Amino acid sequence: MRILIIEDEQNSANLLRRMLGSEHEVVGVCASNAEVKAFFAGAAQSEVDLILSDIQLGDGLSFESLCTVPRDIPLVFTTAYDHYAVQAFRFNSIDYLLKPIDRTELQAALTKVGEVRRSYSTTETIARLLDSMNGQSIHYRERFLIPHRADEYLLVPVADVSHLTIRDGVVRLCTLQGATHVLSMSLEEAEHELDPQRFMRVNRQFIVNASAVAKLSTHFLGKMRIHVSAFPNTEIIVGKDKVAAVKRWLDS
Image 1 (cartoon, rainbow, N blue to C red):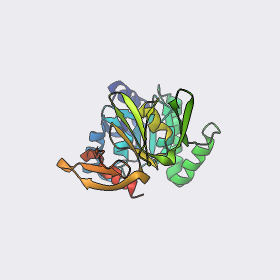
Image 2: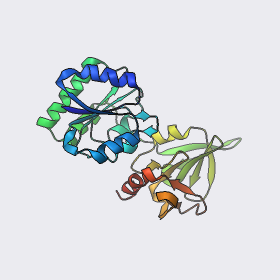
Image 3: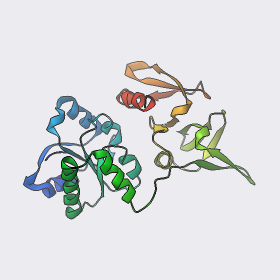
Image 4: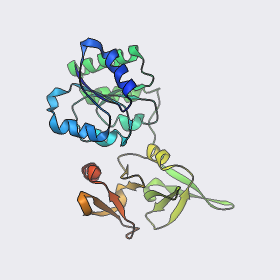
């Protein structure tokens, strides 16, 4: 197989090369989202049979660039973190390997890819994998319990969330009703617990609910502004490299 490696740690990339051996051809190693986008901008889809991808790269999560990769190229994720599994399986993912990568597990994943290419549709395979993930169902957060006063807590359903934002190290939850609450968790933790079909991390400061978006408008230098209904004066700016992914998400 012709394999593209997405990995920002040189030692890890070299280890994968050695494990793949001479049976497979490594067509490239990309160390960032920018390099992945550049690779596929200049390479034919037929040049890649499989992608081995880390998730945390120096310029963000690899999901950002993988959104632009042809959907029929199978993926095997190789990462040190298990909490990205739900997001990973939204892609054309065949397996999810935790670092340090075990040679036997990698070979099993490659065999699975071969079986998929010969026998199954990718959708059926992903369904089987999801059913077999530790026998557990996938659940996204449904509500937030927020301290309100000394003796009170508020329950805020995720459906009522407009967006989450961080400023001066403090994460705030903003509702469709125009209220703002301090949230005792990081933006990264919230991102992993929210349904990615409904919520998206559009930049470093904001996670936005698709239902809260009123409109989009162009911004300077190819950027885009997201306007949310309940907070019309809030500027949520999307970088040029993420505009296409945000549009696809909102148009799904």
